[in-house]
Structure formats: structure tokens, C-alpha cells
Image 1 (cartoon, rainbow, N blue to C red):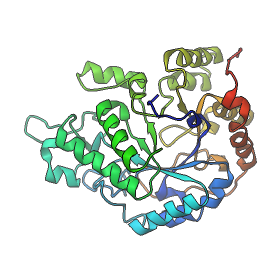
Image 2: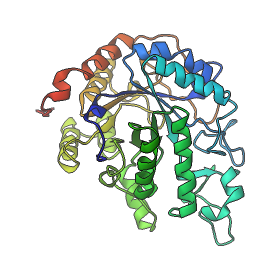
Image 3: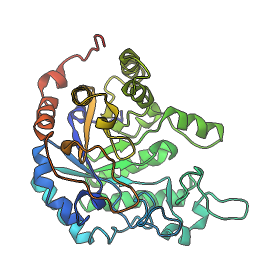
Length: 361
């Protein structure tokens, strides 16, 4: 854990929102109107997937992926204005909610502002053409770390967004960006706004191994805790997925949880979830509805923050497209009472102060 990570980080309930597909209009205002309901779920932090303009060159789908960022300095006009974004933050704060935004510092779009101003900040092929180091991510090109000028620029962006009122940063594929950059960012942002939440999308072990074989940077979860409050659960996600599909016994997953407890700092915190924008919905994985609910509850009670992916309360079975307009179907909120019970219990003294021990499967 970072030296100043508070113990209360394990109590957090995070709610993930894709602005484009959260409402029919797909705007900041559409999210703002829903904040009161989100707060009533027992949520503490609203995480907005990338809010910046999306690149058009080599884009995927009709609208492009939000993780193909054209300009870190402003907001996507598709979502509204900067004032609309600030109003979202203001309204969230009035409900006692914090707002976290996505930080994408491994890559930009092919037509980003940065590649036009600083092509030397990018990985290049033998002809000097900016490229990605992950071939399937064809809509982006990779920033080449470390570089002093690049690092200073990126840290300044985080300081700016903290000044606008942002309360946290979810850092995309944080494992492939130098830990020293994240440490510097945390220290400098802390001077402007103390208590900002830092969540690392730490990656699957196979991805770390492959990067290292290629001579590319890849940090383990343990290394990331030098800068971050929370890391993803992807270190053991493949085992959990195998259990969900009936390919491995529950005991295998429980053993991996014990592994985490012994491997990381005693006060480590993971972000626990059963679905997110990169993974299938739990209802399509679990063998039955009761199992889906049981696994959701178990996830909530594990050490770490608990994340709800928008649509989970509607028992969604489909993950909205990243690349096209694909609004969530809010036909029901059937799981709201269930999730409210979980989020209330997440704050209970037994989970905050008790000893967590896994007994059996």
C-alpha cells in the first residue's frame, strides 16, 4: 500500500459508468440526473470511464473507443461541455459522492494532440511511424516511457483535473507505465488535493509475462502498491473465471485468495467485482441466478473495495459496446435492494475491524 493509504479504502463502494451508454442521450447531464439513485445504492465513488475526446484515425466501430484518447486536456464534446462535467462533480459532491476519472497513460489515438506535437514521445517502427506494442490494440499508439518531458506533461494533466474537483484516478493498464511516474503523480497531486484515490488496473499475469519476454516494462501488483491504494483482482481472475465455467473447483479460487493475503502488505486492498466493462456479466457466467447473487455477495465481503458495474442492478446480461452507441436497458432495478444490503454490510464493524479467514468451500 502507498504510505498514506487510509484503512478506510477497504470500505469503499465504487460504481463504474460509461457516459456514452449510461443514458439515452449519452451525456454528462444524463449521468448527473442519475446520481441520486446511484447514491441510494450505497455508492461512495462514481468512476467515469474516459471523458476525453476520442481519436478518429483508425478508430474501431462507428464512434471509437474511449480509451483511444485524442486530447488529455479537455472533455469529449459528445458528452457535453467542461461546465457540464464540473456540474456533474458539484452535484456528486452535494450527495456525498466522490468522482473518479479514467487515466490512460500507456497510449493515445493515432491522431492525438501529443503525436502531432511530440512524435518522439511514442514507440516507433523502423520508419519512424508511431506504433502500438499490443497488435490487437490497433486503434492506439503507445507512449514510450520513461521520458522527462512526457512525464512532466502527464503529471500536469492530473494536477489540472484534481483542481477541477476530481477525487480519484483509475489508471488504465497501470502495470505497463513506470511506477516512478505514478509515485511522482501521487506526490504532486497530494499537494493540490490531499486524499485523492488511486486505483491501478493491474493486469493479468500472462500479460506481464509476455511483456517481459519482449523486453517491455510490466510491473507486478506488489510493485504497484508503492504508488496505489487499490489494484485490480486480475492476478487471480483467470482462476475465478475457470471456477465460474465449471473448469476448476471452488477450492482453487479460495487458495488464490489465501495467496493474496500472504503475498501483499498486511493492509493491502483489491478492487473486488464480478463484472466490469472488459469482462462478461456475472449472470452469463454463473450457473444460476442464486449462484450469481452468492458470488456477488462473496465479492463484496472480500478484503478490498467493492465495485458495481452500471447495469448490474438491472440484472444486465450484455456488456455495452465500447465502440458504438449502445445504451443500457433500464427496464428494471430488481437487484437494487440486494445491492443496498451488501453495501450497507460493507460498512459493518465486523468487516472493518474483524479478522477475515476463509474456512472452506
